[in-house]
Amino acid sequence: MKKNFPLLLCIAMLVASCNQDAPITSYRTIEGKTMGTYYKVTYRDSLGRDFFKPVDSLLIAINNEISTYLPKSTISLFNQSDSIFRLGMQFTQYVECVADPSKCGRVKNVHFFKNYLAAKVANQRTRQAFDPTVMPLVNYWGFGYTPHKPVEKTDSLKVDSLLQYVGFQKVEVVDSGRIAYLRKSSPGVQLDFGGTGQGYGIDEIAVFLELHGIKNYLVDIGGESRARGKNPQGEWWTIGINTPKPDAELTDFTRVVRLENRSVSTSGSYRNFYEVNGKKYSHFIDPRTGFPKQSNLLSASVFGTDCLTPDALATGFMVLGLDEAYDLATQLEGVEALFIYSDEQGNLQVKYTPGVEKMLVE
Image 1 (cartoon, rainbow, N blue to C red):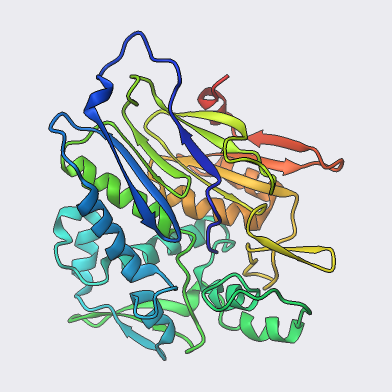
Image 2 (image 1 turned 180 degrees about the horizontal axis):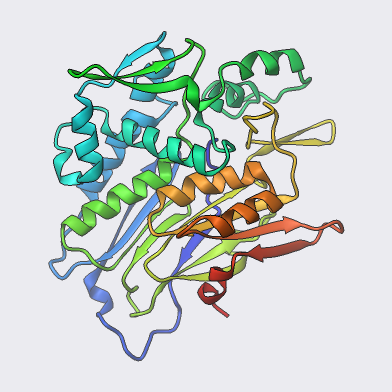
């Protein structure tokens, strides 16, 4: 469930407000590469501090725990394990760290464990449509950490054989009292945090900034964003939602949305896919069938307070499809969503939950 190339592009308002709350010179921007894409952090700091090194180091530490592309990462070691994987600390230490980031200290594999917990919640909230144990199938279909190779001829028996390793109930936490473990039902069970990693990284950077007294910032990783306070023009931060077409420019927006202390994550099927014999195969693998999802839903943008939750939900919504995703989005507390889909004539249409209306910029 790896996220594709940026689906959003953060944009600053072009016209300055007549009631600016800060001079533009008090804002700094740091940027770099992470998780196969870019990151960009813009923040206001009257002390003029440069947070590049600690932010970059934080992202490296996260990647070293949750990237399936690093053979020695925590998640790779878990995927290579037989049945029991030692997390390295007492279970109570993980619980305290999740509740209070200041208590994380030197807790081992904490980024891995937090992603596991978040993925478990998302799995339940999306009716199992979001499932990080789909990793073996992601690899089979050519979208995972193994060499990317399109499936020329579908082998239903192979898909069925891989489905035996899929299901979040196949991974559970074991608290021995002295040290915590993850236990999987079979050596073939693997995890993929591609559906939570970017949102998690954004939230961790935000926590770092806020601990250093930063109240106005925009954190962007690969087009997913978390905004607090105002931009350099004294306005709410705004983002553009890309038009979901393979040939669309990154500045081609279907909608522009105002983020009033909100986060947003978008997943889409229109960039990361391949075509064989005229049939398109999306990177969204349905854990219930084992096959790439076939749907008229082109992108799902999910809004929330944190960014990790929208990140996971956006992936789950793409698996559910338009009608079921919209129905679920209207029921989830604290969540709004905007869906772009193709109608029967092939025209782009937009559908969103009621709370999105006030966020739209004319």
